[in-house]
Every structure is written in structure tokens, then in C-alpha cells.
Image (tube, rainbow, N blue to C red; front, side, top):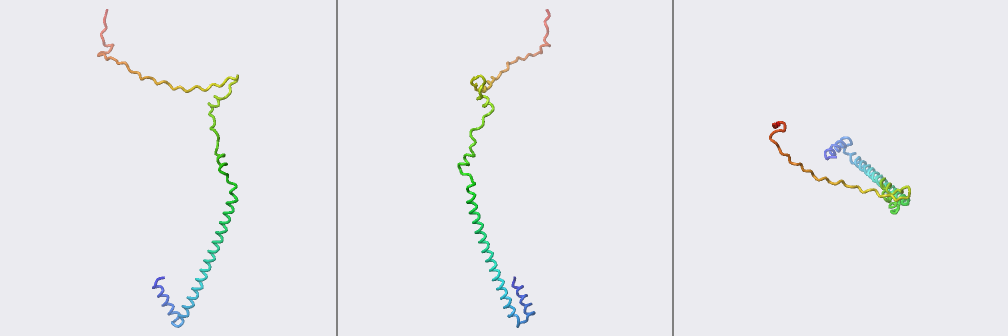
Amino acid sequence: MSFLETLVILLVAVVVLGPKRLPEAARKVGHWMGVLRRASDEFKQQLMTMDQALEKQVNAAVNTSTGELDHLLPSDEELAQAMDFGPPPLSPDDVLATAPVPGGLAPTPPPAEEKPAEAAPVEAAPVEATAEPAEAQPKEEA
């Protein structure tokens, strides 16, 4: 509240209450403001106490429940075993190559893939140019 607002309120109080009753009214207003401030402080203190008690209960519940759930978590060894999937599966070609053959013959390994030989570049033979086309040459008569 600004100084001007406070001055206006005091002037209205002097006009309404008069100069004789103004000090007594100010004492009553001060008394009730003190009572309200103490009640507000007490209420804040009760809320803080309840909040701290609730926080202690929540922490205690979390600590006990965490200890109870520890046995449900897998150990490091169990995790390592679960992540070990063994050797990779064989491809169909590997399965056929190692399959037993009827008649007791040993399986033959698959042939190695051969790379095609690179072809040597072919050079074009030079062509001689003639001045006249073949049809335009005169024919010899015999």
C-alpha cells in the first residue's frame, strides 16, 4: 500500500471515528492483526510438521520396499547367461554340406566359387579407306 493510500484511510478514519475514538480503534486493529499473524504462523508450522512426517513415512516405505524387491532382480551371472545365445545358426548350404549321404559316403565339400577370368581388351584392326565406293569402280570386261 502506498503512502497516499494510507493517508486517505487515516483521514477517513478520523472523520468517521473522531479524534477521541481513533486511538482505541487503532489498538483493537493492531491487536487483531497480531492474533491473525500468530494463527497464520501456527498454521504454517503445523503444515511443515505434517509434511516432514509424511516425507519420513514415504522414505521408510521406499527403503523397505526396495529391499524386498532386490531378490527379484537377476544377478550379473544370470544376465550373462541370458545374453549368451551360442554359436550363430548354420546357413542352408552349411547344413547340406555337412549332412550324411546315403550309402556311407563322406560328404563332399561345396566347390569353391571361381572368379571369371578377365577378358583382354580387343583392339580393332585398322581399316583402309578407299576413295571410291566399290560399286562405283569400273568393271573390267574380258
